Length: 283
Image 1 (cartoon, rainbow, N blue to C red):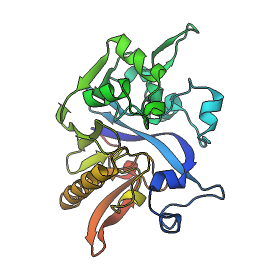
Image 2 (image 1 turned 90 degrees about the horizontal axis):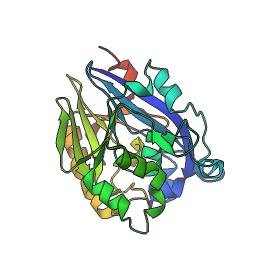
Image 3 (image 1 turned 180 degrees about the horizontal axis):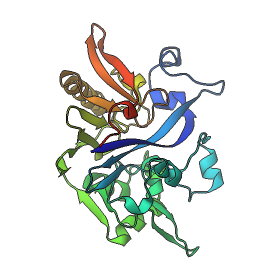
Image 4 (image 1 turned 180 degrees about the vertical axis):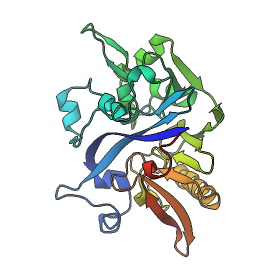
């Protein structure tokens, strides 16, 4: 199994939105902000090559949205999805499984692109099965008022219309070595992948834990639709991850790609941080 961090772009959003009720005087010690209160975040996917299947977990914003829309996020160090894959020797046609943790636009927008014909849309990964949780899909089709703007029809309907989308109904193994579990605090039906890399379990933390700065329990995004549920999910997950020495892979942490955990008098905290490539980009 080969694992690669796919660094698509960085983006900026308001720090307060990323840390909810935690005051800036506290969260800024863990994650810096600029003079406009904007924090810079990674938009990082994970590619898994088993030799038989090539799985991509999440695919970023994409590039089909308007300049006005994308400018809201102050994109920087923007490689783009295809270039980011190409850095590791892969093309969009190589992907066999497009696993989408949830359907907010920064996680799924790159899965659909403008058609080469110039009209309409087509799948970015024409040979892939698109894996989405059934609960998340139903939520996106009938969104609550807080999330409605995060679910864009041009990101979603081409997946359904293609016939290549598969809905996941419960915690399950996609194939030996790749399992997904459903978490509901951030958004209903978020899929969190657990990858068995032989001597370690790697967890793609997605928006359950956007960064190392979100490991302390009260550090919860204002985007989470059920923050009390997030609190409980985080507590249970972190306890399991620390006990089993899981490696956490962060999708949004600009400064730390991976970490392990340790138990301290103040709660579970970061033990060690490192790059994925230093350990797992191997045959």
